[in-house]
Image (tube, rainbow, N blue to C red; front, side, top):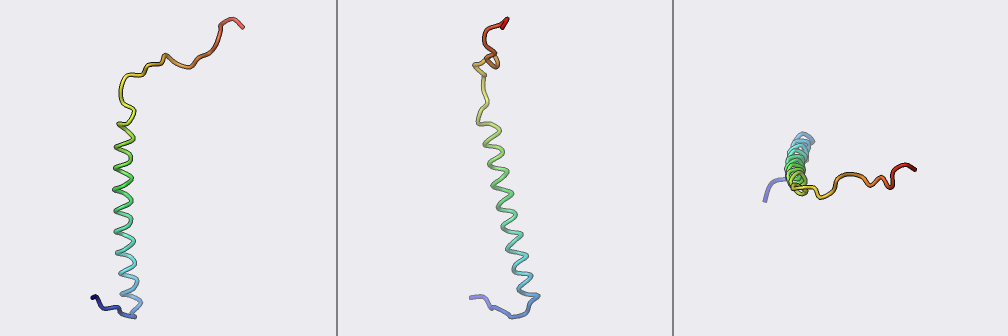
Length: 57
């Protein structure tokens, strides 16, 4: 079990480390989601564009 000190500097250091670890995890998740999203809809598109309706009206 780790020692818990009442020294505010130790507490700030622990909080900073925890925040840094969480930021790294969040960044990794965001990168994974971006890569997954980037490749999700790859492939040939089967549409020719927006349907504009009948012409001349």
